[in-house]
Length: 133
Figure 1 (spheres, rainbow, N blue to C red):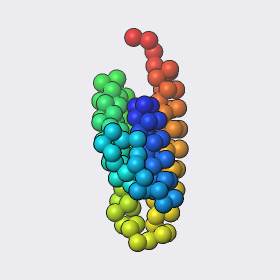
Figure 2 (cartoon, one colour; figure 1 turned 90 degrees about the vertical axis):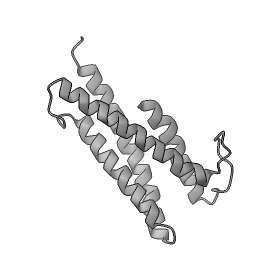
Figure 3 (cartoon, helix red, strand yellow; figure 1 turned 180 degrees about the vertical axis):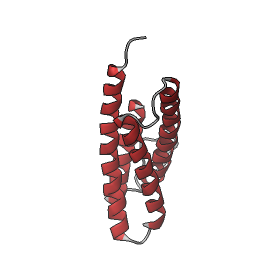
């Protein structure tokens, strides 16, 4: 999950800021030849699907271990992050002609990455706190 966060989320955030700066028509690093503006929503959408799948695994792990589903800060930041991702996706469909909504989308997206960085740290802490098998 850290790879998805760092690679996809980091590059997706960079692409979003490049689009905001007016560089959306430039080619991205995508092997498909997508522009920055084309790749940003695709990359963030795929990242969201990977995070949703990872979340299902985390929920299943909590259940198998006999723990309450939302008993850890890691689970709470995951839920907050996914809700913020969904909110930002909805916002992206509404922002077309609104500079204020575009600004909100950009800063919410960047803040969202900070939430996921905290989430990753909490995940490492949770993993280190588990008893050996």
